[in-house]
Length: 524
Ligand code: NDP
Ligand code: BG6
Image (tube, rainbow, N blue to C red; front, side):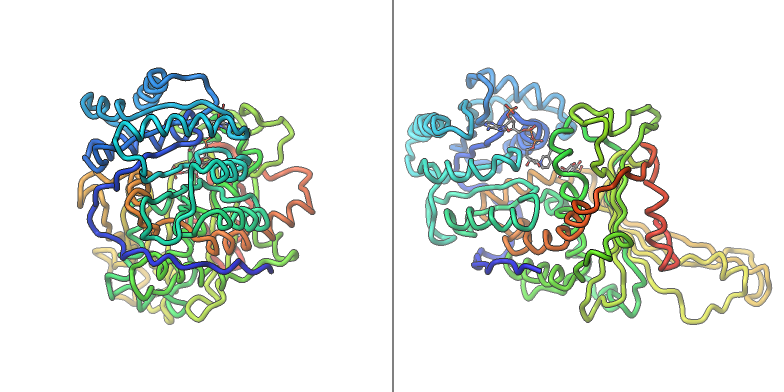
């Protein structure tokens, strides 16, 4: 296995508890007319403006290939806001405030003239604010295939410059969307390119799952309570199930998805992030490097799959037509930009073994798929059965194991399932004794109201403040690829003649159930 490159440490300050105001800065979005910008970034920036977390001299420059003026770009973003599922109500005063600070530059990112145009626009915008040396945040909301050329041009044009320390001002930071590369080799090459041009302290590799409140809560739940941590190991846990099921399909992103497939789209990033947070040791402090060091250690301990393991340990499948939420939906191969003979997996389930002191022998089962029965992301820790079953045959047959579930979405919260005696049942030795599983449940909505901050809002603010804790470090991203790469490699060398199919609106293919049979368990 290849070893990740050495990482320079960041020495960023301790993660803040409250929400500080962003530093004065200009934000440049490459891919300023794309799906991510319209659906997630602009709503997140709007919410930051609404909460007065953006400084008065904030400026936003959208860059894309379309022919737009500042006004038509503002109108496009306003239209996107009205369609966004993130926005409940747009306040006109806030929108006007943001509009006055929103600009547009056109250009093809593979060509020098795009960067000359951006430079001209930045000079105009920044000189108006009276500050020529401004902090700049460059956001690459573009397909991974143009990351490299955009980064090279960005540096060569002098728009973004290397800074030598985290403290140096003005700062220049680069946010890079996922997937970071398409394989271990390409991720290593991209890291080399990025780190030749910039310092690690300038790079924010984003994985929006880390911005979700419920994901951040995993560490708080584990390390701010002393009652669960003693049970959080191979002595008490029988296995862990991590699920990220989506009811949506590829939503017009067929071109991207054909290149990615479910492993690159969800496993290499979101699912492995959930795994590291659930499995890591307590960090020595709550700083970016200490947290990320512990996450990387988990990835290092994952037993690498060798060729012969891939078949039994990983299941792939693709959705057929079916019914989701009462509506009939087409098969993956009938989606726009997807060839009729596509063999791209839209579902995968995988067994991961962590060979360290805490987890040796405890399988972690990961699964994710599009067009599944319901949208649900969760981590379920299933505990071992008691050593002696005391309650008669009937009760024993009915007993289900205790499970602690951290619900990432929807209905964010935590529940603990355990057994109780069903009221009215008789003496424990009689065949009539009954046992029922019950749930103790905490939901964020009930406890705090439904005002959780959307993930992109949290993460954008962190970039503007300079807190990299919730972003992925170069070695982390490479270690994650080193877990996924053998499977992609195996699939590449053993192309399937056909894939197992599952009807849209189901919980995936039958084959996924077989994965768990060896452990005498089943998917939740
Ligand atoms: P889109 O294809 O919708 O948007 C990409 C944008 O980049 C488009 O505006 C496109 O312009 C522009 N672009 C591409 N190539 C060039 C070029 N050479 N010169 C100028 N502009 C160019 O993709 P998404 O917004 O969906 O995704 C962007 C990134 O965000 C990807 O890395 C994706 O993985 C990531 N992401 C997306 C999520 C989502 O929900 N959409 C969620 C999480 C991550 P044009 O239209 O002219 O091609
Ligand atoms: C993105 C993937 O990273 O995450 C999408 O590219 C997926 O395919 C999305 O739909 C899921 O995010 P969320 O926040 O809706 O769970």
